[in-house]
Amino acid sequence: MKVAVLGAGAIGAYVGAALHRAGVEVHLIARGPHLKKIRESGVRVVSPRGDFEARPYATDNPAEVGPVDHVFLGLKANRYADAGPMVKPLLHDGTTIIAAQNGIPWWYFHGMDSRYRDHRINSVDPGGAVSAALPVDRAVGCVVYAATEIESPGVIRHLEGTRFSIGEPTGEISDRCVGFSQAMIAGGLKCPVEPDLRKDIWLKLMGNIAFNPISALTRATMAGICRHRDTRELVTRMMRETLDVAAHLGSHPEISIERRLAGAERAGEHKTSTLQDLEKGKPMELDVILTAVVELADLTGVEAPTLRVVAALADLLNDQCTAA
Image 1 (cartoon, rainbow, N blue to C red):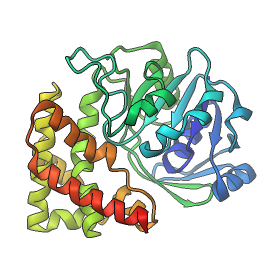
Image 2 (cartoon, rainbow, N blue to C red; image 1 turned 30 degrees about the horizontal axis):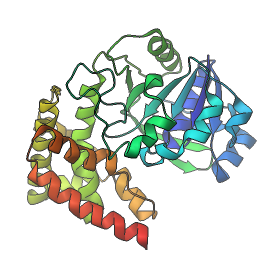
Image 3 (spheres, one colour; image 1 turned 135 degrees about the horizontal axis):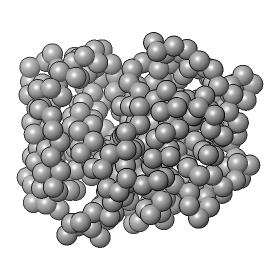
C-alpha cells in the first residue's frame, strides 16, 4: 500500500507516522520548518500511549511522489478548492481521497438515497470548485476523534483519542475502506468502517458548531463556555437546532445534548481549533462547520434562529480578521 498525506500537519503527520510504523509506504507532503525537520530526523510522536519515531519520505512536491493508493487529506476544508494541482499527480484510476475534515463534507449528498442527492452545498463546494479538485467518486469520509498538536517542527504531541472513523458516501463496506482501516489498526489507531458515517459527522458537529464560533467570539475555552450559565444555554440551543436539521435530512445521532456537554467539559481549558486559527491570524474554518448547516436549514425548512445569529456574528468577525 502506498499512501500520500497531503497536509502533514498535526493530524496528518500523526497518521502518516502510524501508517509508516505499520509498514505502509508513506509520503508526507508538508512545507516550511516542519518539512525541513522531518527530512532531517523524521517524525517524533509524543503520546501518553507511548512515544515513537518514524522516518517516512517527505517532500513539498507531489510530483515527486507520483500515483498512490490513498491520499489522506490533512488540509483544512477551506483549502480544498485550491488543492487540485497538488492532488492530481497523486492519482491513478483507483486512488481514494480520504478527507479528514470537520463539518459538512462536499460529498455529503453523493450516493445518498434522498431527494437531495443531486444538491450541491454551496458553502462547502462553491461553484463546484471542490468537486472539481476532489472528485466525489474517489471520496471516503473520515471523522477524527484524535487531538494532536505540532509541539515543534517534526514533533507531534498526541493529546488524546486514536479513533478515525471512515466510510463510503454510499454506505458500502468497500474493499478500499477495509484495506485502509486494517493498515491504520496495524499502526496502533482505531479505524472503524462505518455503514452510516453521516451519523458520526453530525455527532462531532454538535460540538464544533457551537464551541468553535463561540470560542472565537469570546476567546473562552471549552470548559469556560460550559461554566458560564448563559453560554451553556446558548450551546444547548445550537445543538438542539443542529439535531433538528440532521433529523430533517434523515440522520439521528444517538447521543444526548447533556452527554455531549459533559464531553466538552472534560476537555477542560482547551482552545478550539477555530480560536487557535483566529489567534494565529488564519481564516476560520466556519463555512463547513456553521454556514453549511444554516444553508441546510434553508434547504429543509428548519428555522434554526440561534444558528443564524451566531453565524452572522462569526462571519463578520472572520471578515474583519481576514481584512486586517
